[in-house]
Image 1: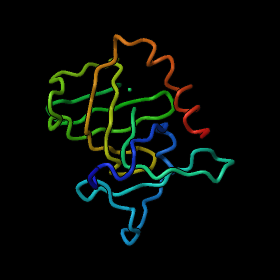
Image 2: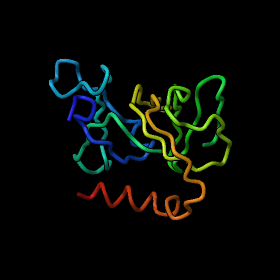
Image 3: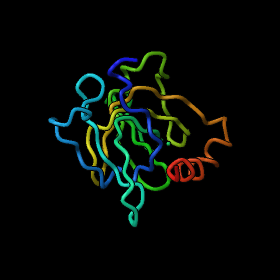
Amino acid sequence: MGEKWKVPARKVFISQLAGGTQLPPATGSSVGAAGTTLWRVQLNPVSTKTWDVNLVWGTVVDCDVAGDWLTVDDGQGTAQVEQIKNIPKAKNKFDKGMYLMVVGYVLQCGSRPVLKAVKVQDLSDQVNHKVMWNLEVTDLQKC
């Protein structure tokens, strides 16, 4: 397995990215694929448990394919996803209201996190995925 997958994709809420802190470059484990940086997010405000993240999931509230970005909302926050045109086999058209799985490298945390798209998949016809999202993320973070 190469450097690209040094850290597994972690399912986190976008709101958790708001408080993310960038790991210093001197940290041996702080670089993900193609020079991307790892971010540390706290999973629970009353816990000290953290995850190092460079890939996350997210849902479409706004998009501009010509401008090469879209905005996703997971019900707890919004994030901008950039470079959507560079994704192999991705749809050329995204509409508001589509339920998407978005996997991307975290480029910036804060009040409006920014991700570089790696994979975008339309899950609009998969109602169970949307219904289960909050429960799934919460359950995975208990481990």
